[in-house]
Image 1 (cartoon, rainbow, N blue to C red):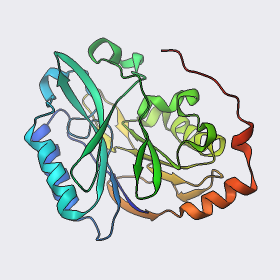
Image 2 (image 1 turned 45 degrees about the vertical axis):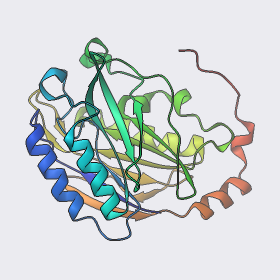
Image 3 (image 1 turned 90 degrees about the horizontal axis):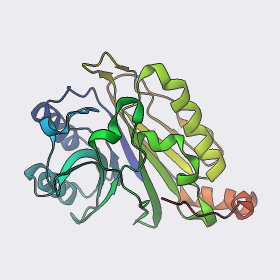
Length: 256
């Protein structure tokens, strides 16, 4: 699977500039790319002012993303601020090349910034089956909660996180992504933003790709960039058969 990581300098709460930027970036994606990954809240930056930037499920921009995926024959994922039934959600979209899409509402809301005060949490984890892969997309703060990402009985083949993770905690981002790859014997991709926001947070990026043993396939990136990686599911399957650690995992249920 050929995957593109877009590490972008988001413009604070400027939906028009951000959507224009990503529409241009998507037109430049290399041919035969299977999946494009964008950051968390890629249309606005990580804001606690959802009323200024929200979209609805009927928004024209979502329709434009669907059309782009159909025309360019790739899947796309990233999160957007959505208003639905008078509630705001940090909603991840996984749009398929057919234009169909799946959604996941961020479960773990970042209380340090008061995210839980303005957004409604999700509950169920999403597993997308795409081109023979099972993909588990999660959002930023979810990274700190390993039970929710646990790959019991090889539920997924690729774990990915879209994020707005600031520099002052970037060591945790790097360390936790590596841990998720090792403990779940899974490819892991983290796509973070870069630049700065009006809360004086700096974002270096550190988007990266790790293999099922926790080794870097793309080392942490800095600044505005688009990078590509081709992942081999067969190699991961062989490693899982040789080192059958997942079969020894504890079984448990997560109680909401």
